[in-house]
Amino acid sequence: MTAVKEAGRRPLGHFAERSLAGLLAVAGAGVGFGLLLMLVRFRWSPLRDADHAAAEWFNGLVAPHGPLVTVLQAITDLGGRPVLIWLVTIAVVGLLIRRQSRLAVYLIVTGVGGLILDPSLKALVGRLRPVVDVPIADAPGNSFPSGHALGSFVAYGALLLVFLPAMSPRWRKPAIAVAAVLVFLVGLTRIALGVHFVSDVIGGWLLGAAWLGVTAYAFRLWRRERGRPVPPLREGLEPEAGDELALAPDEEKVLEHPRSAVAELLVGWVLVFGALYAFGMFVSYHAKGTFFDTLDTKVPRWFAERHTDALTDLSWWWSKFGDTHAILLVSLVFCPIVLAVWRRWRPVLYVVLAMFGELSLFLASARVVDRPRPPVENLDGQMPTSSFPSGHIAATICLWAAMAVIVFPRTDRWWRWLFVGMAVLMPVGVATSRMYRGMHHPTDFMGAILLGALWLSLLYWVIKPNADVHEGNQPAIESEQVDELDDELAKAARPD
Image (cartoon, rainbow, N blue to C red; front, top):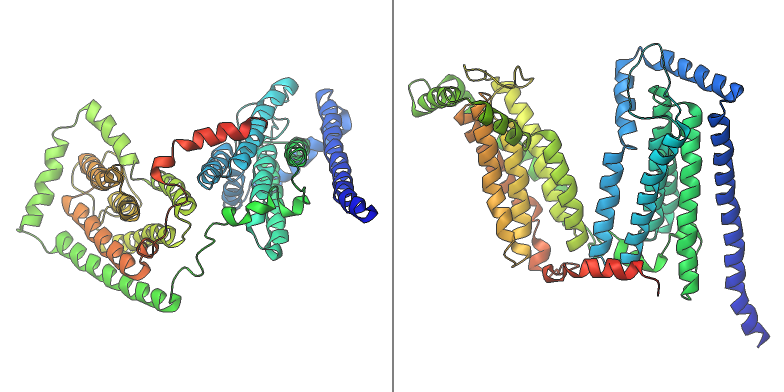
């Protein structure tokens, strides 16, 4: 009997020990932030002098080097709201699809809290941003605490706590180290770019640690109150959810024969490039007097004669659907959702290779063909690439057609036809807008179609993105169960 009691006390004792250490750490971060807040608020001279000296030193070190500034900007964007909100939103959607609504609620509460704390404290303190000799970046609002430092600590820390159980034990420490280095680098870039003082960044880290600790501790208390074991944080918030959190738990290997697949793709890339080169050179320099020449001459003029302010504005917006930012945004939403629903990497690999192959084929063929733009007003001005083929149109074709190829055989619901419709509508709309703006000939559109058709067909043959469907793979959530996600989220948010 005594042994049984001791066995029962041992987990509670371990929990109490871990909880006390965690509470002390959280309290220490909170006290540290409060002390720093008071020093900044009352303009303590030693801290102020050290902050300004560090800002001037970093500005003198970084400002003369343009490439370094570009690298710092790229790193600092990883701590910006657009990236962090995208990461947390995609993670929440994936968790709901995998029926992990408690973890989804945790991410929502933790993320929203971070979003509230940053502007509130900045308004309370009212500290102005650094003024340096050579400004290399700008940022709106006040300075203390750093929103990038706070947001990156909270977002990457929360994501790490949620998804640690999906990793094998040997990868957990490296994952923690990578997250820590990323958060440190984001904070460092804010100082190096001259938009925050050192104390702003340290304050952001301390506040982020305190808030993340409070939410993680609350989650652990919730588990204890419901009689669930409370593991060390190095194992994540819910270790028993590891299988459900794994990206592709049932996929032993992505491709059966990866080496031969790489060889086939390389050979196929060369053949597609050859076809693009041959067609591009013909329509650009050897098609005089042919139907292609008539088409390329009359269509741009026809559009140029019908310019109106309203159509010009509409064409600008529609052409944006084919630029790099829009294509990347749609890809970054579609691929994680596909991975969450069907638990396979092949469909994601198909989309990713479609976009990388399109980009490389477009850049290579545009370079060698070097076709001039149509001899009409080019509303987008001078472009860094030549006219053939259209990169906007090719990217739009490859993205939306690849999405339709993935979705259509995986569901029998009516909305699968929306993907088919978008695979037609989006390229036609982008092509019309690019020709209206005088940026492309009709045969540039044909070149984009040739690129998309050949490259996507090659990828489909090599990657076989829907092989798991033919093997009987079922989605993690059926389409008719989508309405249940809101109910699960609401249930998870209610106390038992």
